[in-house]
Amino acid sequence: MHPQFRITSVFAALALWSSPALATSTGITGQSGKDGMTCSTCHKGGELPTVEFEGPTSLEPGATGQYALIIRGGAAKTGGINIAVDSAETSLLASSAGLKKLGTELTHSAPQPFNAGVLRFDFSLVAPATDVTLTLFGAGNSTNADLKSDGDRSSTAKLSVKIGKGTPVDVPQEEEPEENADGGGCAAAGSAPIWGCMLAGLMLFRRRQG
Ligand code: HEC
Image (cartoon, rainbow, N blue to C red):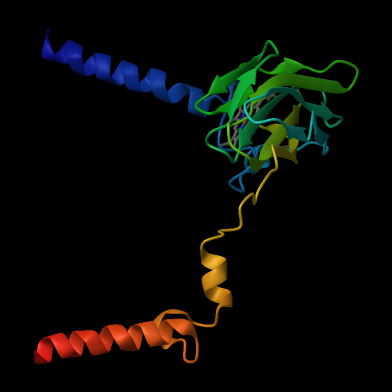
């Protein structure tokens, strides 16, 4: 391969790879509100929409639940979203057309049209095999379809989902009795272990002497 061609292809690959992050109209992650950032960092000037999750607040371990993130109001011409979950063992799957998976998160693949002031994105959640209480984070952007970031605004929503018995399931049982039995080990004056410790010490002392 000609070296110059090789360099060009590296640049082409880089441009392809980085373009989805810049063109947020084709989807964006890390803006669900889970890490503090939302679409409103860049999208400003529009009216505030309302954003909410719909779906079960409890699931059996390993079960699949049907959910939706719904945007109402705001500029309400087109819109997009970003959904994330705070449990690494949980997977999110896109159900709506116009919704895609990017990394572990969900986002719009192109600006989606509102219908009578409402824009709904359906997805499913596959619960982890172990009990946990997880949180879904969603940001919904209500945009004015000018393919720019002004005249738009987003809101965020959260939903707690209890998997099995939820979290915390087991309060660490091994730790508790030790804490409650004032001290324990050789420091516990007046309790049985101290005699054991003294005996052991005495025997060790005797053996050394002999
Ligand atoms: C880092 C800045 C930035 C962030 C954060 C951002 N966007 Fe954007 N967004 C832009 C820019 C710039 C454009 C215009 C260029 C384009 O179309 O990508 C845009 C355009 C859009 C459009 C088309 C808007 C219109 O009026 O036609 C949608 C829909 C969109 N973004 C959704 C989102 C969503 C949903 C989020 C949050 C989950 C988000 N964006 C977060 C910068 C951002």
